[in-house]
Every structure is written in structure tokens, then in C-alpha cells.
Length: 136
Length: 136
DNA sequence: GCTTGACCTGGAGCGCACTCCAACCCTTAT
DNA sequence: ATAAGGGTTGGAGTGCGCTCCAGGTCAAGC
Image 1 (cartoon, rainbow over the protein chains, first blue to last red):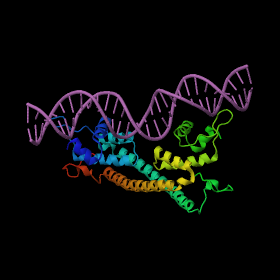
Image 2 (tube, rainbow over the protein chains, first blue to last red):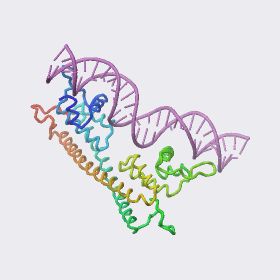
Image 3 (cartoon, each protein chain N blue to C red):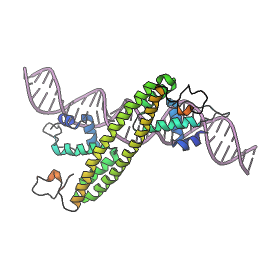
Image 4 (cartoon, rainbow over the protein chains, first blue to last red):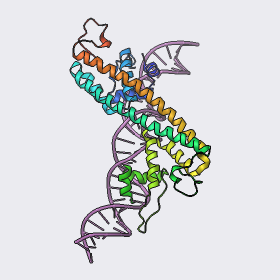
């Protein structure tokens, strides 16, 4: 599979693919007679996993580290598991933060609805005589 | 309250505070006789809300837009509510993506545990005669 | 044989969100 | 009076993660 097709399948731009290769996230694939990159299915699967790490907020440096461990082979199994466990904890934390903040957001939305109906006044002005002006 | 104290209370660096002022996220506070910024409690509350938007992945541009609406006063109430609703939906999506990816992560961790105990073989090599080398 | 279009390289540029710096000014304590 | 420890400014620099570009090569179809 040439880079164009690989790009479509992975959802990454051609430039990004070459960039990932340059920085070492994916191995340089073999080339065809004309010097063009020939990607295979395995690389796609690997890349998709990388993208999931990415989607959960793992930065390039850590993905690089993970990729480097993977290249070391079976010896790095435990190290990789530990990395993933750490990351999983971080993701869990991120999720709970998001949940918490989302409830703040929804409370604010409710407040706004009430204010729109004139049923509430901006809390930042609740102590004032006139509750007309709002600032939240 | 001077910028140093405000910085500590908000958890933002002094530089970031001045940066936020420069780009318009927070209003220029009044100055004391010596030209030093004097922050008040309200700004702190507002800033904390901004930080929550930030924590849920709202970029500076959108926070700027929200800040601009807020400056318009009560007229922008509905617009702001709509912004928050959109954002809340985005956050919900983000949460569900994270949850999904987290389960992928945990499956992988389990697989690694099994591989470490020799109870499993790398799926990418399951079709091979020798399941010794692994690549996941 | 020529055009078209996808690929190649190295390197520059970009947008975000800060972060740091030099050079200066005030206030306060000694 | 002076030195320390805040504060001020404008502007440059940083790190991340791409993204774009010029100028070139190659393969396949008409």
C-alpha cells in the first residue's frame, strides 16, 4: 500500500506520516523500485494503537518511548505494561475531572436558563440591592 | 490583591496573567499609585471559571469569544448559554471517547499480563508457526 | 514520447499557549 | 541612603505537533 492509501486508511495526512517516520514513531517502511514507501497492514494496526494513545492525551515523547520499548521486543513487555498502566490511571483521572467539570458547566447552563426566564439573578450580584446588571 | 498573590491563588503564573490580560481574556485591572495591578475577588472567580473551560479543552479563541460576550452584558445571556451547551456536548463526547479508549487500554494491559505469564501470544503473530517473537 | 499525478527530499513556517528576558520603577525595611 | 523584593514594559524565545513548499523523480495511460 502506497502512502496515499495508507494516509486515507489511517486518517493521517501524508505529511504527518512522513513526520512520524522522521521522528521515529513508525519504522521506515520498505520502498518499491521507484523509491516509494510500501506500507503493510501491521503498520496500520500499530499506528491505530498509537492514535488511541494520542487520543487519550499521551504526548509524542511518551509515544516515542513506547515505540522504542516495542522495538526492543519481548524483553520490554513489563516496561510497556507499566507504561500503559500509568497512562490508564492518568486517563481515569482525566475522565473524572471532565465529569466533575461537566457538572459545573451544566449547573451554569441551568442558571443561565433561569436568568433568561427572570427566575434568578447573577450570584456575583446577589448581595447587591439592584440585581439588574450581571457579570457572570 | 497584587499580581503575585493573585498568581498564587489562581495557580497561574504572573506571566500568564499578564498574557491573558494582553489578549483580552481578563480585563485590565485598576492600578495602585505605583502602577501595580490591583486584582479583586470577582476577577478570581471569573478566572476560575475560565480555567474550567480550559480544563475541558476549550481553546483560547473560544474562551475569548465567551469573554467578549460576557462583556456585552445581559444581552448575550442566550448566546453564552448556547456556547456552554455546545461545549458541554463536546465534553460529553470527549468523555465517552476516553471511556472507550480506556477499555482498549485495559484490554491491552490484560493481554500483556497474560503474555508475561506465557498464557497468551501476540495477536499480530497468532497466525505464525512460531509464536515466539512479538511485536505489539 | 509526453503528460499527468502521485510520490520524493530538505527545510521553512505556523498556531497555540505560554515562558523568559533585559531593563527599568516603586515601596519598604534597615 | 540604600538594598531587597516586589512590580512594570515590550519583545524575543520555546515546545509541540504538525503543515506547507519548491524542486525534483518516477510510473502509467493516451
